[in-house]
Every structure is written in structure tokens, then in C-alpha cells.
Length: 314
Image 1 (cartoon, one colour):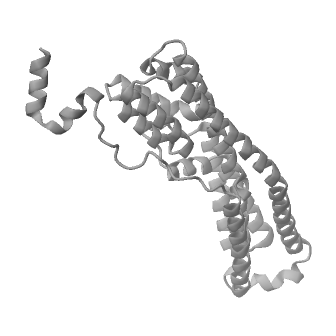
Image 2 (image 1 turned 90 degrees about the vertical axis):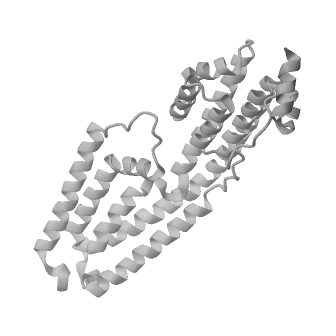
Image 3 (image 1 turned 180 degrees about the horizontal axis):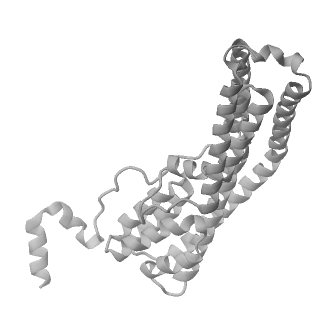
């Protein structure tokens, strides 16, 4: 081993650090992380860090340490750790499963609202009742919605905050219908919710069919990755003279380029397999609408007209 890679103490320190980090993450996965303050919405980066600080992160660090000890290649250790960490996201299957679970949860919640409203129950009573049967992915946003309603937040504003919490185009269609009904108090909400839940179910069926067709392609890509990584590690262990050119710093640089090309290819494949989500409807500031048709003229007539109208009504 030449240069920086020839020092066994350096490799021992790096491998020990990776192993220790893996053990720490494993303990964190067993004990769990402390929950955040109630009512606070976790950022996307924080959610990803919480997912990595678990069993998957521990396995990634342990795999990287074993690869570093077996091959004495720093790039191999880092690359294998990143591969184990991102294995579930290869091809975008994990993200697609989460999206389908969210769609199914939205459809079930919409059907629950429809059935509750059918019993001559108002929207203010139907939403808290639907919280008990909501899927786990909707429990936290719906709980925040119920808390806003209990603190006298107007229904349209609370529903728009729910749309921001869900951040889903399909949810915007459903919440938009609820906002219109909360403002106008018109009939037909039960039929509209039934039609929207049917549309969500149809989209869910379409995504399931597409995901089933892509499953074989994703499996083939994973097999290619396993064969490539296994072949490289096997050559390094069984025939180290064949790959001794990678022992030098220049060889590690070339190996890093090869690993980067592999990573770029799989990132590109994941983007091809990702659905293009439509733009959200409920974005930007809410429009200012009159509270009722009777007061529509008072909005633009000024305070004198409003005083005259109240005086005439008395």
C-alpha cells in the first residue's frame, strides 16, 4: 500500500470511527429520538435525518467499515456505506409507495367525511369525527386542523393551513371543495366528496398498475448493482493483484470517478421513474370573498351603506 493508503493506523482509525458511528446509530434506533414540540411541523431535512439516524444508518456505517477493512480502499468504504443508506430509494419505489399510501389515506378520509355528512352533520362536527378513522399519515395534520378549529380559527383559514400541511395536489382538490362549502354553505357537498374520492381511487389504481410494470425494471437495476459491487469486492479479496492499481491515490481518484458515474446513472433512473406531480391549486394568499350574497354590495359601498343597512334592519 502506497502513500496515504499504506498506513494501517489510518485505516484502523477510520474503520473504528465508522463502526462506532454505526453502534451509536443502532442504539438511537432502538431507543428512539425524543419527539418534537407539539404543533411544530418537521422540515423535510429533519424527517430525512430522523430516518437515517436508525437501523439503516447503522447498517450503512457497519458495511462501510467492513469494506474499508477488507479492501483498504477509502472510496470503497464510503461508496458501500452510501449504497446501503440509499438502497431503499433506488428506482424511486419507496417514494412511490409513500405517495400511494397518502392517496389511499386521502380517499378513505374523504369517504369518511362523505358518510358523516350524510347523517345530517355539519362540516364542523364531521371533521373532528373523521380524525378517529384517519390513516396514520393524516393523523398529525388533521389533529392540527381540529386544534385550529377549537381555537376559533375560521374554517376557510384552517382548511388552507391543512392544505399547506399536506402539500399534495390531490388534497388541494378535496380541501378546495370544503373551503367553498364553508364559505357558501350550499348543498351537494356529499355528492362532490363522493366524486372526488372516486377520482382519487382511480388515480391510485393507475399508479399501482404503473408501479407493478416498473417493478421488474427496478429489480433488474438492483441485481446489476449487486453483481457489480460483489465482483469488485470479490476481486479485491480473492485476487488483489488484479486490482492493485487502485491502491495508489491516483487509483482511488479513478475509482471515485467510477463510483460517481454509477451514482449519477441511478439518480437519473430514479428521476425517470418519478411521477411529475401537477401544480398545487391552493397556493398563494387566499382570495378575499364576501361572507354572503346579502353583504356583497356592502363590501364595496363603504361604511355609510353598512350603517344604513343595519339601521334599516332594526
